[in-house]
Length: 114
Length: 115
Image (cartoon, rainbow over all chains, first blue to last red):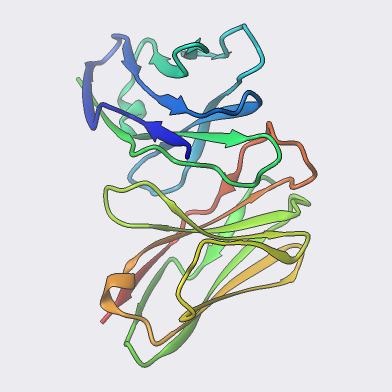
């Protein structure tokens, strides 16, 4: 069985500060991809960043970056210079190579304080 | 065009009604998905179509009936639903051409209330 764990149901961050959201993916697969999605109150899932498990380099997309620890099966999402618009539910969603399934974690609600 | 369009945005139906949810994309994607999302929970996969054929059915009750008439359209037919089926129904699509590193694109969902 493959388990996705987001251990922080809720996090708060001051505007302009940095916050890290955790995600672990317990799998025996070696070829997989990890996606972080943001779901604001508007309901639409929006891709934030993706990480490929075979790549040593951590993914970076503007203020968003992944801290990938392969041995620990950990994919933390770091948000720098937090903005009010970052407030949303964040889901990590791994996908094994060769399957259509995206497996969603339980999510972390991020609040950004002005 | 990177949009997945879902209609209607809101739907209220009685337990004896028959209704359909519609999803459309024009990105040339060949995999399309239905997810169900309850409040404060992650999306749960219901169905996946790949090249217009049903590829995954996550043991969904038969009162939900998916249909993929062509590569751009995905429907979810609803019949004899229960109040506990009230949820946000999300449609998504992905390339489906074995590019496993690509994300799924999501629509804004249909908020369904069964009364």
